[in-house]
Length: 87
Length: 435
Image (cartoon, rainbow over all chains, first blue to last red; front, side):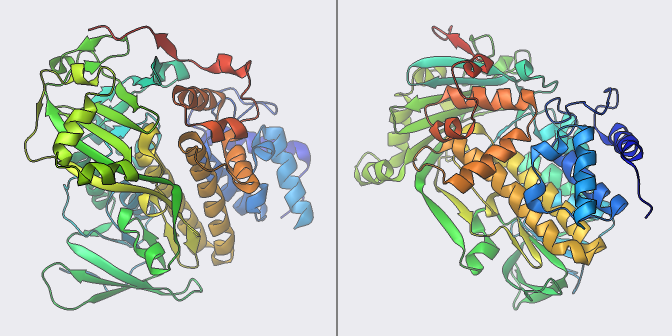
C-alpha cells in the first residue's frame, strides 16, 4: 500500500464516516466530536476498527481502544498513522 | 430432527443474546446452528427494555416486526427511593423512540423467528451438555441431546457462542463462574390484571388507558434492603420484589407462606398498594428465583464467546439485561466474522470483545451494586467505557444513577460527578403521585 499523506487519510476517514454513521445528515469535519455527538456509538466503533484494519493493514491493540483515539476524525487519523508507524 | 454434523458456528440458546448473534452471522452468510433447550414461545421474566434496544432491532432488520407487535411503549421511569419521588423521561435524552414493556415469551420468539428467516438453522428441545474445546480455535465439538431421544448428538464447528442464560453451560464447564458476594438476592413476582399505573405526568391511570397514555416503569425502594418493580404490559402488569437472600430465608421459615409474604411486602412500598388496590393477581402465576450477580473469569477464549446472562448478571434495577444481551450478541458476531475472515486476527478480536464487554459490565455494576468498591483496574475499564458514550447517554446514566442510593461506585468513576455536573441530572422531582 502506498503511503498516504495526512490530508488524503483525513478525507478517506471522513468519507467512510459519512457513508456509515446512522445519522446521514450530520455534517462531519476534521474536528467534529463524533462520540459526544452520538455519531459514533459502540457498534459503529467496531465497524470502524474492522475498516481501519482492512483498509490500512494495521492491527488494533484492545488497550488502544480508548475514546481519545476516536474523538474526532483528526484523532482517528493520528491513531491510524501512529499504528502504521509502529507496525 | 435433522441436526447437521458440522457448521461454522453453534449458538447455544435462543434468547435475545443467542438469536442476535445467530442473526448477524447468518446475515453475513455463515452456516449457523442454534440449539435451544426449550420450545419458543417460552416464559421469561425481565419485561422492561430501554429504548437502546431499537438500535439493535434496526441493525438486525427486525424493527418492522417489533413495531407490528405493538408492545406497550414506556416513556421512562418513576422511582420512589428513600422517600423521594423522581421521574425520568427518555425524551429528555434525545430518544425518539420509547422503551418497551414486552411479554418476553413473545419478544424472544419474534427475535428467534427472525434469525430463522435470515438463514440460521434453529433446533428446539435440544439440550447442550458440554463443548469439547480444542483450545486453539480449530474445531469445537458440541455434545447435545434431543428431548425425548436416546443418546447424544455431536456438532462440529469453528466457533461456539454460549448464550445459555443462567444455565451458563461453558463457564460452569470451565469452572470459572464467579459469584459476586455483593449481590445474593431473590426475586418474587406475579402478574396482575387491572393494576393502575403511573404515567410520565406523575398521574395514575387505569390499565385500560395504557395505549392512550404510555406508562413509566415504577420502581420503589423497600427500606434500605430491597426494591420492587411494576411493569404494565398489554394485558397484565408484572409486579416483583427483589430482596436479600437473608431476608428471604427468614420469610421462608415463617408459617405465612411465600405468596402471602410477597403480597404483604408489596404493601410496604409507597403507593404500590394503591396501584394494586383494585387489581386481581393472575392465579397460579407466582414465581420465585434466586438472583446472583456473577461474571465469569473469562468471557472468551480460543473458539468461544460467552454472551448475555450466560456471561454476566447484575441487579436488574436499571432494565439493562436485554440491551446487554443484544449488545454482547452483536459484538460476538462481529468478533467471529472478523476471526473467520482473517484467522490471524482471532486473538486480537477476542481481546477487543473481552475489553469492551468488561467495560460495559463494570459500568452496569458501578451503577447498581454499592457493596464492594471497584478495584482501580475495574474503575478504569468502566471509566473508559463511560467516556465512549455520547453526551446524551452520559446524561441518562448520571440521571439514572442519581435516582437510587446504590450508585456510590458510579460516582467514584465518573470524575465529573460533582455538584456542577449534578445539573446534568434531568429528572423531575414530585411531591406526590396524583391519584
